[in-house]
Image 1 (cartoon, rainbow, N blue to C red):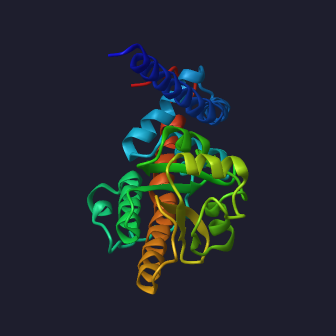
Image 2: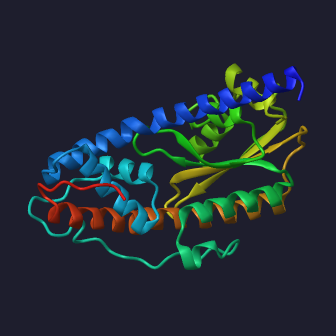
Image 3: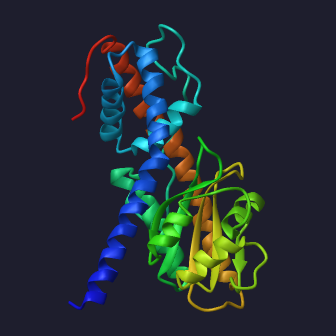
Length: 280
């Protein structure tokens, strides 16, 4: 390999390390805050014991630590001495998804989000796209799945606020948004526009994932390497159907699987009061 080639490889390795450090830095405060809350609530010996509680519940219910910690920090705390955290919770059946069978056996949110992305890219005819979910702890949208995009793009759009991007506009309006030409679209801030263009995207289309009550709880976006003239009615209807089904399933997952994980964590915490636990 030439010296120039080795330099390029080393530069990319360093960039990957920086992206990883930034990702960890975004998650660490959330996990740390959740650990502090659990230590206080269950009288745990140390932060390691609190992390072990989170980890055990995360692994048992296949829920990401970040998701579990974020929900822990935003739901009402259990009543003192109450055996169940959510004693009046109503359990509802898992919604059906017609665009995938990924949910039937595993109940995995990650599998469903991958299916949402795959379906969107098939309908729009592009290999580039990403899925975001509403960030309950920070607000805005947090990236969960992506394919065909550069590391700089993923890092830049790891979390987006309420304006400056087409996905933010689609979330605010709760409607599909097409950007025919990224280079001239006024919806983007200049740094966001540059990050998108550098990834090879010249146009994009965002689809909100909505609950039965019309609340946007996520977003899937397709990116194209060419400018667009618009979407067909058939494409729009297919993406609307998928966005509604996916949003209802995600809302069910939050109300059922994630709360099951917290209920399990609560039972462990009550049993382990004062004890010293270790992560698996």
